[in-house]
Amino acid sequence: MGQLLLPLFSTDTRMITPTLGIREIDGTVYYLHSGVPIFSHEAGDLNKFRYITSNLILQGLCSNQDIAGTFHVSLDSVRRWKDKLYQEGDRAFFNDQTRHGRSHKLLPNVLERIQLKLDQGQSAYSIAKGEGISEGSIRYAISIGRLKKNIIQR
Image 1: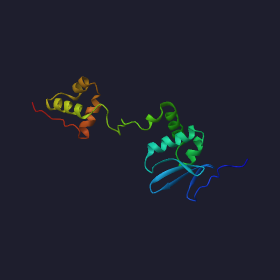
Image 2: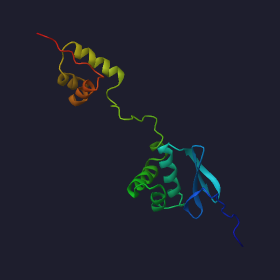
Image 3: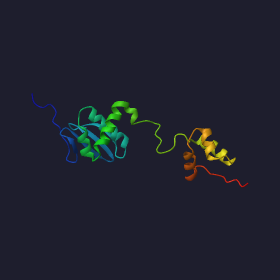
């Protein structure tokens, strides 16, 4: 019996494997298997890119090297993403609690408490001890302007 589904791809499709390709249309990236879209995401969405490419590898549709070569990313990164998906599942890529570089301990209510203590003349060291955070966190928040250190003249 012959081939049941002939993979047809448009000329602007970038091939990952002979049956798996990728195509971008109007800012949306489509992953095609035998010419049929199986995944898609916005062009700038790195989390979905990492999730989808890891998923393709775990499904056996391509290898780590195929992804690394097609998208010009490091092989170590591809392995790390794949392992993350395998061990932690979808939530590893779509966690709502992403911090985006902000301290998870210096939340607005904590900053208010610390600012009150700074206003009273308490040292950064004693505040840090009391709040259970590092003195460096408080000093950094002062340096970037999230907290104001009041100088009390004696």
